Length: 317
Image (cartoon, rainbow, N blue to C red; front, top):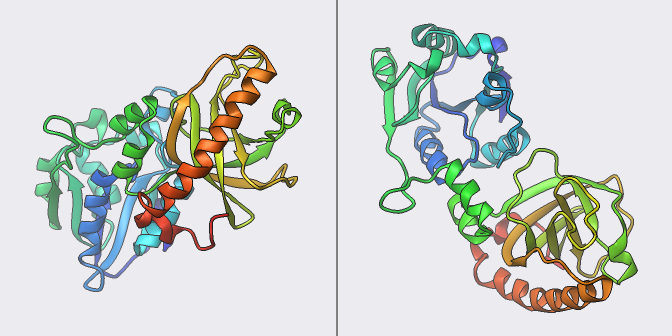
């Protein structure tokens, strides 16, 4: 897949294009992309998206993301999309009238068909709609919402709500893939090593983290995969950090990987964050957590995650 900035685009072959921010690449978004892929071979296939969330620019929000731009690129390439066309989002772009937006970003392409969601809006104050797109020369395909239940559609907002409740297995279903956080291993307080549970403290950047607590995970380190347990929290027993930490105790692993990038896949939720009466209470609970997750994760991988196992090129240790 080729990634092209819109200001540098020079395409000549007919194009089938899905448009949106795709801030999750969940089942709702995938319905648009799969529609585009139906025409692979007849045309080139493409996805058009922004480089940052519009609200980061319009309201100065620091938004934690379900998926990073790099992850988006990797997933779209795995799916077989030919081009990712990236709009550099600015206040000037946001202020474009609907027709100018169409002329600047759609009509300059050899666009045969456009695929978008039923609620897609664009242009100044989101004043552009499906009706504006219907007036253009390209074919327009409008996809309905993918519903979570009778009243609520699959959306990034819903996924974040489920993550806030610790419902990571439900999140993985709506993403159609396990939720992952990639980051660099940094130095932490190193208390875990003192009680026999060394952890990798991970700089997760602006990724959205699930509810505080303990999770069964798969950890990729140097292209090898290990079962582990992750803790997300504020270390309430010691109360000496000011930002959520992501720490992972990797089973059967004890190597120095400071400064290296690792990837944590969240599989299931074990328990809430708890305040303990010192290190001994914490050690007792971690021993129980590890015993439970050692058994359950292996069963989980062999049953619930069968559809995801092809993502792992090596055996999970």
